[in-house]
Amino acid sequence: MDRPTSILRQLLILELIQAHIAREFACVKSQMRADGLHIVERQDGDMDIRIKFRVDDRYDEAVFMRKMLEAEAANRAKRTGMISRYDQAHLPDFDTL
Image (cartoon, rainbow, N blue to C red):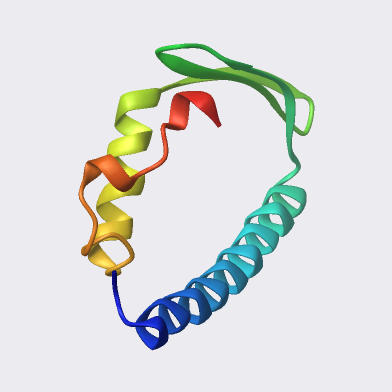
């Protein structure tokens, strides 16, 4: 087991990272509104995420491969040091979230 202060420090850092993510999420939502981008429908499949969207009066659809999104998210987390101390066994199963 890690020292209690190490675990507490990790908790505090994660709280700050969560606050940064919440602000970034709000910025993305604001940018979507400014661009007239609206999600019409979202379908989460086993292998992909399909999003039907509208930009002003134009409708379109995009498909994002789940494995690619998971890999990019894990890569960004590793670069920021969020998961450098943990192996894949400690990561959540994204399919059950």
